[in-house]
Image (cartoon, rainbow, N blue to C red; front, side, top):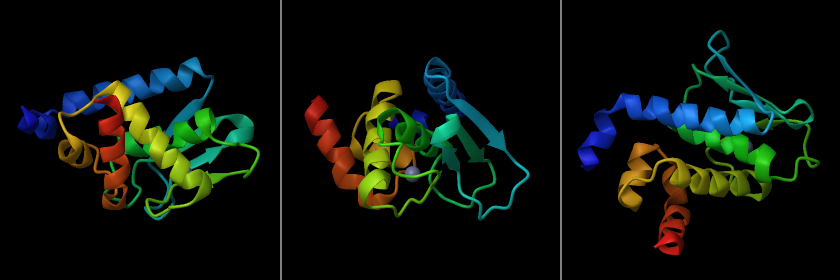
Length: 141
Ligand SMILES: [Zn+2]
């Protein structure tokens, strides 16, 4: 069963659709951009509730995790703190850590792989977040 998670790209598309539905429901605009350089991170502007996802962004982290992270800034973060958010998988403090944690929660509700390790691999979650994923799995039983 776990193997299916790695080969089923259709499932990734479904998850992307589910995340975009969450965006639409909350009046958040998500724009996939493929004509900016690979060093430009995904960017969120709270004032206009807009997210730019850089399709070419040079990172191992999955699109699905990154989008859930950006959505989390707007849905659960304190958007008065910053004018703009730029994705960094190494953001370990404040609003960045909060967005990472809420991305984990959001993805678990959308599509939950069987265990912590398969979650990490399926969504290409930064490895330092393992403990947070594990905590979330324990909470949800
Ligand atoms: Zn962020």
